[in-house]
Image (cartoon, rainbow, N blue to C red; front, side, top):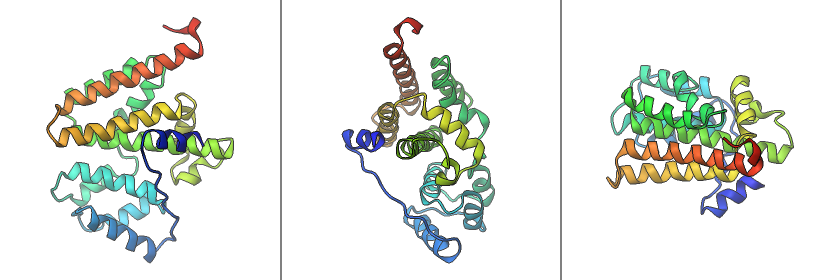
Length: 227
């Protein structure tokens, strides 16, 4: 599997989240994860997560990671959970990857600049991009195992429109490049928290390097079409 190979080559680990049934088993897992991450969520948040995200533990784990970044140690209200969870991210949050993998990859870096200039939280942006790249890697793994994108929405527990977007994006970048982006995001999060680099600077660097990755890959595939 090229995705697993790319993860291993970069020193990463693949974590398997088994499927659980709806109901008490899922609630128990979710409440345990919320406590482990030190999250303080408003009343009804667990029910909202279960209803909107479903039973995919990987997707739930991603949502909890985003909530932890949003909380930054503080309590998170029910309204904040409802705005953050299950695809309620503003459209511009989705456009970073869309632009990076589009006709002008440099636009992806420009969107990051625009989001930062609008006052978006750097930690929130890092978490959202991390989740989107991990979804992309999961889609690539699904295609590598199945030979097609059939059943992608059900496998990842996501709406059809997100599966269609992921299927298109999965063909636009190699798993190795996506893994480099994920590694860069994790390293950036660590360095920002240690105070080794400015939080806005590191996001801009990641955007520019990702755009360069895409352009370089296109040059290698078709030198005559490089711009």
